[in-house]
Length: 278
Image (cartoon, rainbow, N blue to C red; front, side, top):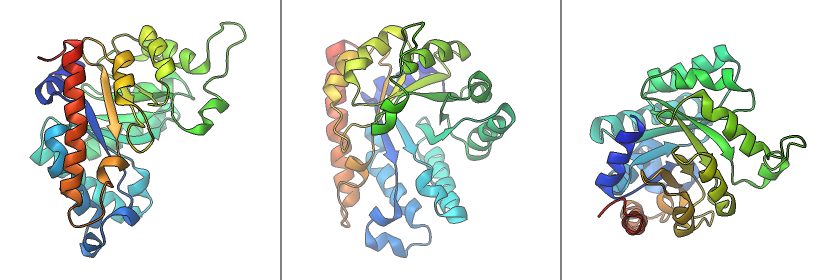
């Protein structure tokens, strides 16, 4: 999927919502824990309830890898279910990989060829050769960590280059944008950084940004849209816990559908306000 195709899906659904499948076993309803593949059964119900409002899903691999082979089975079943029942949905592996070239090639093979994701989150600390294997696949994306929302982000990401005057996250963006194109590189920018998002948009006016932290983490969707939207939308806003864990009863899927619809309706308004959709 290239940027144009992703934009067409956004216009079709009047939404730039990404639902994070951070499906922690302890958080799923008790009645599902008796299933053979409980996390998959939970994901399936969430997907069916929210797919009409959603352009992307983003499983966080930690919540699957923690359970070894069983976790990988649940992940693979989830991806296969999405591909079979909701073709055209953008699938992100929130894996935060990045290693020496040979190792990154194997990570890219695992996520793109073996499992079938469209994109992988990667960290750029080891430089160009650790990211390039992910951009070598036609129609696939590397989503580079630029400015994250966690408290420890300030340890390194705001460090200023004494010679160039750029903060580290700005240097990451300036250099890495040349490692690919707007069709295969996207950036993670935390929802709590709306003050810096305007400057990031100046640096990369045409790239898509993946923005986590809306919902349970307190990010403000309207503020993000005001400074982050471009004429091709250019945003995927992720919400995880505030949708998938909004309710823990047997009605959890219906509540998730309601929360996703509320976000989609606000997104439709923001897209129309920008003139992107009618």
